[in-house]
Structure formats: structure tokens, C-alpha cells
Image 1 (cartoon, helix red, strand yellow):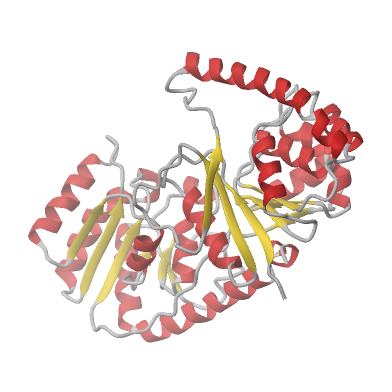
Image 2 (image 1 turned 120 degrees about the horizontal axis):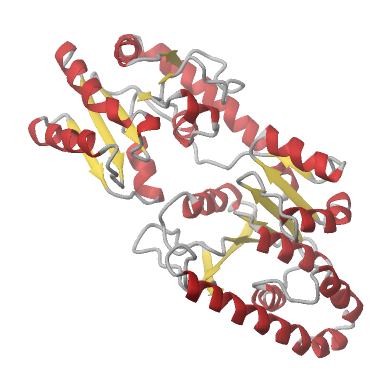
Length: 415
């Protein structure tokens, strides 16, 4: 039996920084067993030598705006204007093609719905799908959905015999008076009901918002970003404490030098791995202190660099205890990726007492609560001294999350 095809779209990503490439690779590993997977990227994307699986078929065929608005506003808007007129021209040029394909009514309906202009990237993606013989049984997954992608999804769905379309909404959509996200959301309501388009949100707040705007719960799902899981063993007598991600005050980065120094005074059975890639003025003093500690203490390792998908996860595998040092404001924003990483990699944690995020997964006692440096140090020592039990609980929680992923609407709908 031939495998179905899955197309992953990440149109704006220019390089490996941030979570966009990681999320795309997570989707690839999550679905690779059941699908032939292609990824479409823009022509300017440069992975800068970072890890991309050899069996992921990537196609750099999209022409995005070369200029960021905040960097060069004039050239950004100039290219947007040129793109606008080019897409009007192409909308006319494509009419004979759809007459020959006997889909002219579908095409005109799509044009009317999109105010008589082709959506950005339509021509490249449409002819790519035709060339590789994508069918209604196949799938397109927009990894990070922006307004232009809502427009594109609405347009593609109106062309007969297109693959099923899946859109992941990472952020709360902005309401605009003219056009924008909610304009296209209303246009695609029929396709949501008829299961041609599926929307996925990460928070209950956004789920309720979209359902209220449509006055319907059809085709809108609460979903997770897939993650690769790791089976941890308790091999070493020492334990490695970790910090990975952005160096920010509200993530507790500035507490790290004090934590390391005080733990070293209490015990020599700890190592430390600290990873971050950028340093701003708020954290420079702490960063300099960490780098100095790494010079004088062989048990302290500082990676001041970006880590690609593979290196990041290889480093996670070396960490035994992860203190979550986020302040209350940061926690309220939800979705701290470090918690996801810790659960999937079976890492016991210290967490703030006001943390509600992922409590449906943190059923077993793989963590201790701590709201200060002193409490964090005390709880780290507590976890180390009874590590086998905390690890066992972490394994159970990891299995809970794995079951949630396997029952996730995204997994069920892309099949």
C-alpha cells in the first residue's frame, strides 16, 4: 500500500533561530512513519549547517519579502506593492489554465473570496501539488499560520480536489477592521464544517475565542506541538543541573550564578550545563559570572551559542534535574517549552508553586515546588537524594504526555 503524502509549510523562516525549524522537524519525526513528507520553504532559507534529516525532502521555492519592516521599512513596503501588482497580473494569466482544467468556476469563486487577487505563494504551491500528484487523501500542514496563510488556505480549499488543509495557530490572532485573520476565518467556515480545513490552537483561551467568533466548534481543535521522547536511566552518582533557552530575567537566568555557588558549597555531587544564545544588558552581569565560573570549575559547562535540533536534544539527555525559575508573569503567559522538554526527556524539575500549566500531565511527583533561590537549592538536593523515585514519577508523567500526543486531534486528523 502506497503511503499518503504530507506537505509541511514554513514560509517565512530565514534561518534556524527560534522554534520554527525545531517545530517543523518535530512534525517530520512525528509523522514520518506513516507519510511521505515534503517541506516547502522560501528561497532565502539558510540552515547554516544545522541538522536537517537526510530523508526530509525540502524544497526552497517560495519568494518571501527580502526586507524586514523594522529593518528597512521603505524597501519592505516597496516589495509588498510590487508583489501585490504581480499577483493581480498572475490572477489573470491563470484564467486559461483553469478553463482547460474545467475548474474556472472554482477559481473565480476563490478570486471573489480573496478580493480578486491571488494569495501570496498560491502559484508556487498549487503547481507543486499538481507536479507531485497530491490528492484529496493527502494533507498540507501550515506550521505557523499568519494572515497570508489564512488567505492561501481559503483559496486552495475552493479549488476542487485539493489535499486536506491543517493550520496551526501559535499566537492569539489580532482583530483588524479590514481583512485579516477573522475575515478569512469567516470565509472558511463551510470548509471547517466539511472537514476540508482544520484549525489547531495551543491554548483554551484561543479555542474559545475562535469558536465564539464563528459561533461554531466545528473544525477547531486544542492541540499540542509534537515532541520527540527520550528514555532516561539513572547511571551516574553525580547529578547534572540544567538551564536551556533564552537568557531572560523573567526566566530566572540571573539566579543561576548564586544557585551554582551555593550548591557547590553544599555538595560536590553536582554538575551544571547552561545553554543560551543571546545576552542583553539585563543579564550581562550574570552571563559574565557564569562564564567565569566555567573557567574555574570543571563541573560547570556554559554553551553560549544556538543549538540546532539534534544538539539541543543531545544536551537535554545529559541533564538530570531542571529548575524552572520563571517568575509569575512569565508563567502566566503559558507554554514554557522547557517544561515540555523536561517531561518528554523524563527530567525531574523544581517548579514555581503557582504553575498551572501542564498540571494535567504532572500527575506523579516528578517535581518539587520552589519560589526562591533558597527553596530551589533545598528542593534540588531533595530530588538528588531520592532520585530514583523522582525519575520513576517522571517516566510515568512522560507516558501520560505521550498518550496525549497519540490521541491529539492533529494526529487523529492527519491520517
